[in-house]
Length: 198
Picture 1 (tube, rainbow, N blue to C red):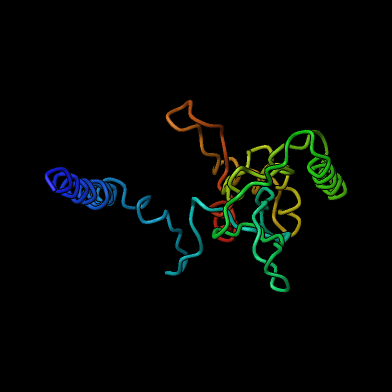
Picture 2: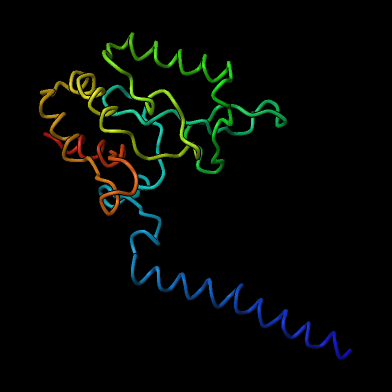
């Protein structure tokens, strides 16, 4: 009993400290210092939540900028032992796990690149327009990707292409602290700004 009692006391103490006190303190500090981020970086339009700035969405209309491909999946409704593609399924974050020599990956990227060329894209095709991110939920695309989409979006909306390109340029986020990451464009925020254009 002399060894069991201190072990139980330490277990309860450290469970309370590391399992309750520490997470609650961190949550409180985050809510005070970074309320928007701690709340999920939710984006509102007309008083309604339309998404999060941290989780991508699957935009399919030609009047919107398209997110990068997503490899997320969901259970097949016809056979629970299988999965089906479900782009930007936030309940199942995952990448494709296909290696660089995978024939399936090469075929998928080639098919996506061919589709971009058929849609009128010229010049080099940005990698993020034909490959998935590690999480499958990346909310950003590269500025090159956005600028290549701008003429098609402008045409679909009947807008001046220069105005759409200027909108893209205004939404380019620089690397964090000037050197963490790459320049990027948040697709949801860009599309909301596009809707606000008159």
